[in-house]
Image (cartoon, rainbow, N blue to C red; front, side):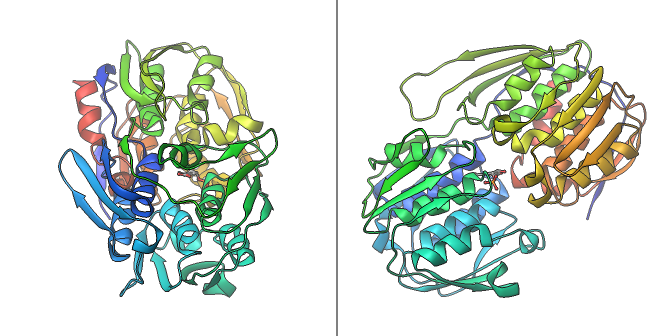
Length: 429
Ligand code: S3P
């Protein structure tokens, strides 16, 4: 593992930027392209390690995927175009690949084995494996089928009515992929709404899915078409520079063409409520996924409570929001976010340990964190825990630190943002 030295230069963040394509949408575009019929063209696909794992798994399942510089082309041959893989499917560090792929494979009449890295091996898979077993898939794995390596033999599935215990778009999406392969109507109830990229993409590929006040309803036996997918910039990647601009003096950043899907824009709401200068300009209409520009300037911030239905709308942004809160006056309370414990690492412990070592006043709770601002961020040795979002948060911390920060494990950042350091450099020049 590498360690990098991040000197305390205390720069301003200034300029315009397009961040790489959205991770969630990039994964789904490959998957829908593969199960659809015809040629799907994907532009601004995120070539981060996680989405490349999805491409490699679908290639092993017999799908023809062309990786060009500016676009990815998936030659979908429908559900039956997927074939039994001759070797193990390696999902790398990607929870989205693992869980959504299980949903796809649940209805395929063949055997597959899924394996990932040491972080994936700790992440709970029963949340998808259990309902998929109820629908008819045969899934086994380590510790009674709870963890990777997992094996799955798909087959004829029956539709289910399922009430999700955790708010997880990955669980919902896996069940939607499986539900598309049944003979009946699948009904899914979410405790609170989660990102809806899968539902939008079903429609974009000319399928049907409905939502009423309490449930998502999906008819089985749907054959999907192909599509042209323009992936918006990832707001979860943009969040690092939005926060960087808010907490560094004399800063102003504009992020262009970034995804503004309302199930993902919790970070905008948090910055607004904390008193940050933020302007949002939507720039497309009538497309499957909204996008636009976001401008953020240096701001005086105040602490707030972040909880309830807001949490799934910013779940991946909580590490960088914790850093933001160290620079706000007063107390920020993050609640209802126990899911953070089962991300790429335990993000409650990791954030609290690393920010405490940098001088922040932050404590862990059962389902979140309490942060008292405003603190001076000091230098010292920190680590990413192999987690891309921890790595990026700690790099942004070094922009305001009073001394050098040494970050162990920066290579994790390539999972979702391979060009992170180059983009940061263009904003700090
Ligand atoms: C994702 C859903 C979220 C999120 C992850 C991507 C997705 O996970 O944290 O980075 O693409 O559906 P959960 O569904 O586990 O909350």
